[in-house]
Structure formats: structure tokens, C-alpha cells
Image 1 (cartoon, rainbow, N blue to C red):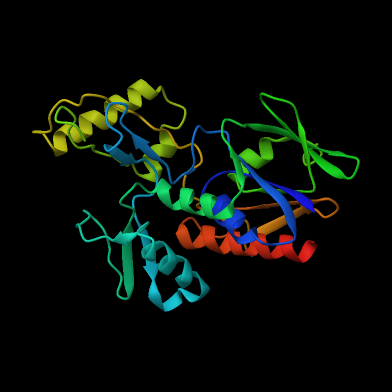
Image 2: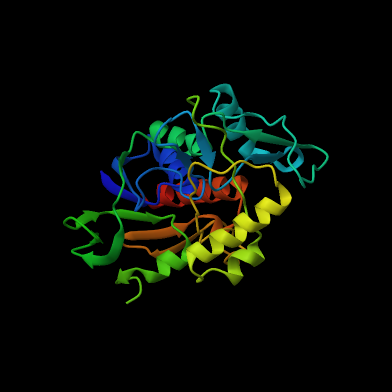
Length: 282
């Protein structure tokens, strides 16, 4: 039985792990450097009231019914379990396409990823930052920042491409006092311009602009400024069909929206491609 490691507990990693359940594999492990699941579909919860949440990455998911294809079953499953519900509230600036449906996650957008991780039956470990992947006796020895290295027969990388390129080793050489949350997203251009700026200065720029838009907004009880160094994919790796095999024996493969396109469908397409490639390798 092959021992499989999925690096990255985001949407692609979670869905891929779920798709691999029942294949001729041993126990699947999922490692992520963060303290919880979600990746760029993360949900932040108030320390004072867990019911007070804010989605820091994706806010909603769009299904284009005409080109849904095999992905439609993923939406239907999430809807049937109450993970997704139709988005009925108006969103300022949203362009609604004919034939498309928008969905939100009542328990936070990270609940989508958590659902797939639970369905996978995998052993999920957080705060496992992978630093090095090396060949040892026909297996992949995977080292992390803290803790001893472990060996796997198959390694699936679903982290952002810039993080893959940084790896070392043989692949490179609600309570009454708590009010609602307000999430402010900047444009891609703004994020690129201020990527390496002082977070405190960037936060003040955002707050100043917000105050001009909503002058009556009360003073916040707390503020969290989230910088996404690896956000939306602007140009995917060409001609990869959702994944790229880096080494065949033993198998090392990578995927994610960097190999498709940066939305829910792109991650699902990559997960399907990854799972098919791994199964055909066994």
C-alpha cells in the first residue's frame, strides 16, 4: 500500500484527498503550514465569539451552469449537505452573468475545505511547514520546519507555485458587545504595489479610504490586516491540464489553481486531474 502525502490543506488539496479515498492507497496524510484548513479559502473567527466570522479569501462561489460539466456534482453535494447556500444578498460591483448561480457558505468559506478533508479520512496535520523533499531509497523523504522527516511513496504538492519553487532538496536542487465584521478587499493592483510595504502603513491607507466611503462606520473593536502574497493566479502554467509530474519513480506531482485558473472550478479541475494521475500511477 502506497503512503501518500498531500501538501496544502486548501481546496485543491482537500478535494484531491477526498477523491483518492478508496483507491489502492495506504493512509493519506495532509500537511499544511497554517494553524487551520482553508488556504486562500480561510475564515477568521473572533476570539470572543466563535459565531462572529469573516471570510478572508474567497467570499462566494460562482457556478456557470452552461459549462459546469462533471463539476456540477461537487456543487450539488455541497448544497445537499448545507455547506453551500444560494447567495441572495446584493454585492456592490458584482457582474451577474446570465445562467450563473452564486453560493455562499453559512459556516464560513473554509467549511468547504473542511468538508472535503473530513470526507477524505486523511490524517491532517497543521503547522507542518515543508522545507525539503529528497529521494531516499526509492521514496520521498519530506522534511518540515519542526519535527523529524517522514518518508512517502507519493507526494502531491497543492501549495502556490512560488512556494513550490522555494522548496529545497531533489526537486530544485455573536455576543452583544461584538458587532458585525467588515471585510475590505483591495484590488490586485493595490496589493502588488504595496506587497512589501509596512503593514501598518498599508492598513492606515485602507482605513482612511474606508472612512471616506463609510464615514458613519463605528470605531472597530479589533483590526486584522491580511496580506496575500500568493493570491489570485494571473497567468497559469500553460499546457499542464491541471497538474505537472515532476518525478515518476517515486511519484512527485504538483497541482492547484496555478495550473488551471483561480476559482473554485479551477481547483476542482486540478484535484480531478491530480487524483486521476495518481490512480493511473498505482
